[in-house]
Image 1: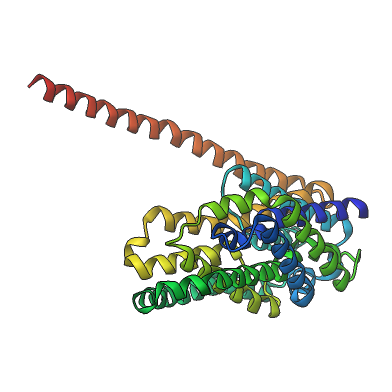
Image 2 (image 1 turned 30 degrees about the horizontal axis):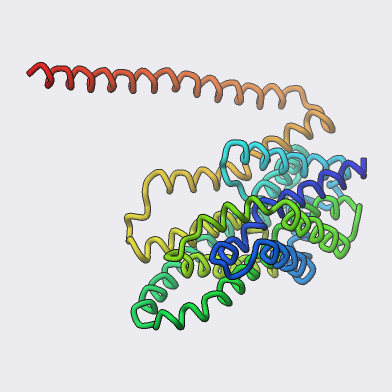
Length: 361
């Protein structure tokens, strides 16, 4: 059983490195400041440095501040990690960016609900910072965006070109270090709580595997993020990396698992608002952001709760209840689809009739 827990944790760690963490050096690579090989190496080095220098506090939070540490046995640790991994896998297939911190916390809360033991004060504190830190990132990014716009008007172009490569490398490293501090704990926190390793061992081994995931499997993510960067957005993108990375580092020293995905998104919105004003808040973007915030922890919570009830603490009535909610949700969605198609078909028919009428006239 212990080997299964190790395997799931280290697989999760490598996926964290390959997906989110590898993107930290995307701006530096896309701008030509460093080659792909150097970018991946710097990313891996930053992740390991972050994990070793400041990842321990978040490991302790995930292992003992949400549910009692003695409650996390090896089977429970496997369930937490499996729920988080499955949530990320499904989200990747659906192209929905979920936060590793949120799905891990959600999975731990699901276990706590199944056993009816939770440290509610700690959960409320974490949720408060999930909301507060992205808002702070937005406000700071807005201010930075205004400063960058003003600086561009007065700065000499040649001076920007000399400084910018060092700036993008530094901000990329900052983001990589922050990923190591905050995200490594998601993979090793549950198995540290289960007593399979110490905190020190966890951050070293977890850091190495997240770094290896970035180094060996992060090439495609780096390519995608790097080639999407344009010269016009380069300075703003670097500011987003630097701001987000700094906020996550501060949160990590406080032992807070925070959603780096949402922090980055809010930073981008803040930069956008500094240039375009309130037009940046399109309804679709805002709704999508809110959905991600809600779905991330709830999805893994439901999965971990059901896994506990099926494999460890079987409860027939709970399974029926959750299954009924799932069937009702699918049913409502299936009812909505034909109605939506009918409405679209009706609109299409009206347009065709109108065109036909105008043509005849």
